[in-house]
Length: 371
Image 1: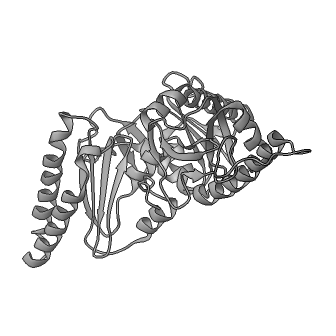
Image 2: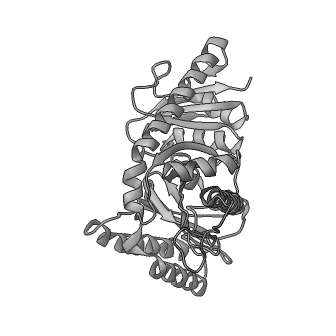
Image 3: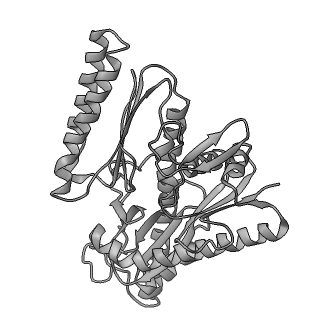
């Protein structure tokens, strides 16, 4: 498929988490989408690479250090600095070279370990609304993959999905005529046939459990597609009007109200579910308890106010967590919330982010428990 790769696929993330070796290098840094701020991004990346070289110089032979440094420098040259998003993560091992562009902020750091540091990617993905946009047309239907306000058209052997049936007024492929023939009914049946094939192509392309879909198109096309489409995706909005030639930026502007409405519905549903768990006594608002329960697989739902973070001291003996003002101080866990999010997702719990101030039952974060 020729379209820009997804932020990162679940299978790829799992493979990175399972990989072992040394040195495994993870570079994370915030990036900028626009000039002139993005002019500093390549410079800061080179600084991170130099910090890796300096640290490895204390552990490995000079030749090995220079090989790692040259590969990281080469990766830096392959990064599309003019079209980055809000965050960048680079993974490097003896066999892996992977650049991940993220439409969310990440903290700047370089990690050298026996495993890759994937927490920033896991947490970043949990903060993204991943969805698809289909612009229905009886000439060519386009598909876009979306993450928050970032939209990328899928260009592949399948999409755009072209209609090659008869068209009214087309001298090369006209609608049939003559006595007893209803051209409109024949045309509509041809369109249904086209949309059935489109539906199959769509499922093969997006291939995931209950994907979110926004359908754009004129009323007639949406009605015909809805007659034949699969129920295996969740249609979160249908928007009227032809978007055949719309750019990704124009589409983002068009779908933004629908995305916000979906976020509000999802937030309200999560808050209601947490409220029911509180009434049933299956909940906690304690950061220390959430840290334990998430690792034990007991977290059914984690509700977090957006941008909430909590740094502090973890007391292993007493199993307590004390908030700290300085996340960079020695011995401080820089953000226990990210740890809780990652562990919840690893044990197939759900994480929903809500706007600040919405979580009145708990202070900024609450967890509904499985048992």
